[in-house]
Length: 252
Image 1 (cartoon, rainbow, N blue to C red):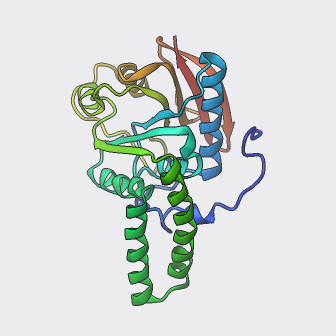
Image 2: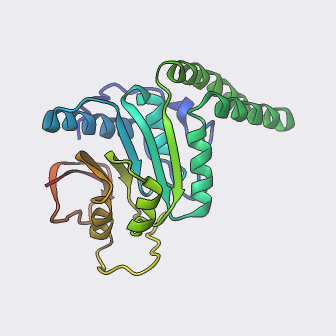
């Protein structure tokens, strides 16, 4: 795959999972460059198809620690009205709230104090690097919150539990879904409640139809073995990078 929007290699070390942003043990972080590319492609497709360029409501129904959401908020906050994440895992939701909190001045200041205390206790070079990165992030977050503060929300729910998702969403309509669905050794689907079909991805897409806006775009990252299909969606684009396959869909 050729990158269309993030053509140059950028040093994203300040955004490394586990440095300032919190990491979820056992779950590898999604590549920052690829997340940025996918988001920008979704925004461009939304504008081409629906002639809509306003800031979006961005939702990840399998958010884990919301690392990708938080990074996208940091990089593209001016294009985002609200970041919403949900996950079936209780620990993941706790970390997701902490990561999304780093998009606020108070949340980042709290994290900087936490890193400073760890640095005093252990004095490792990695802690010094984390503190330096947090100061760089602070400048961006202060500027972003001054001109365009981002609303964030995270809640615990299975991606198959449409009722729980609707209750937590309220009347909020989602413009862009960006999710890296479970696959491989590090993450598996966790089913809760009764699912009428063995096709878990179809079930997820079916649930999402209840919260999408009429001009929504859905980006799903999977491995090449997983089938992404639902009768209410049309594939707009598909591309692959390494073992990851990216499917960009729209409602029919």
